[in-house]
Length: 252
Image (cartoon, rainbow, N blue to C red; front, top):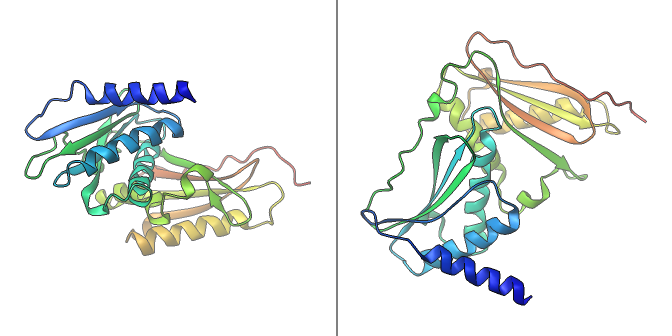
């Protein structure tokens, strides 16, 4: 316990050093793809800084790698904002998510911006996500567990159903030439047609909650895998839809 307390204290002290105003904007933290427990510690510190500056705005920035599930970091910052709102009591209107665009590695930044100041991070235009791409791009993938279709357990509590698909819908709505493709896979023991119904359900979510044109989203049954899985694909103009890749498993 003493070791954990000491480590936490060192973290807080380090986070408070080297922070200089930049036109009223302060970078509170910057880090890569870290475990959930580290995320929560950093978000707790960020919440304290926000509470101590009631007139400020908090920004959570995500940058990502083009061909390594770019939607995953954007989904994760939606989860981070949900945690700050639901657990730390930060008003939702004091928090904003910024798409930081492509980078060499996944990077997250937490910014504290005073009233009237500008964030020194230029948001990425999501319509450029597929610039130069000729083949479908796997945007995001997640797993589903349990009889009630719980999404990844660690993210179920703070990530709303709308927030789960918001990054994907934002890219589609920003570029009318793109198509979206949802591929759902069922577990080996589930009833036939479960994959088809799940893909159709997610398509309805995209069209009803995010105003994505129904004609621009394909819903495919992927077959069986060891774990129930959902894939979200971006499909450029003229490219065929991605092909499902079920596992070589037999129903027992």
